[in-house]
Image (tube, rainbow, N blue to C red):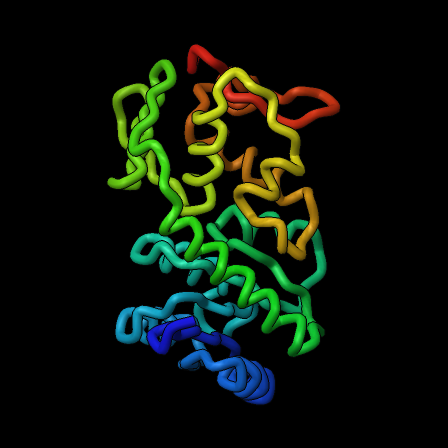
Length: 233
């Protein structure tokens, strides 16, 4: 860990925010805090954090909307921390570009471990040596430019969606198991559940398929996982 690693903690409850901040500071991270959505956006622009811990229920902007806005400006891990337990909240949060969804109450030690794992995963992705471009049919992916072109038009993907598409395209024609996808894209230290793969495949299909309900690019291989069509069409 470097001295430059800063975590933005966003929660409107000072007791929760301060306890998280204290625990992360004890781990050696720099911590900045915000109690509102607008405050979080401003703090992120000023401090350029390496990770955001974001509550869903904020007094102004909903945390999901904050996540969407952060995604337009930053390619950093975003961890949702919320008391909400309904599955729909988890799907919406991940669809908005969140990398992880943690339900309160959560132990400080576990939270710190999740933060470490997310940061490690982010750093490993940044330094990984990879083929710089992929083209399968009408889909083009440029790793260095973080650019995806689908049927001649640019498509914006979140960092996690981009990494998922890169994995699938680099293995075009080969079926990848859900666990293999999870280990590669989310890392072997992922604490969440395997269903996160289905959520991200669904949102990726919405962005690259002609008809997401009848996918021709990201195919489901029953009993195994997913396969990217070798001809990209």
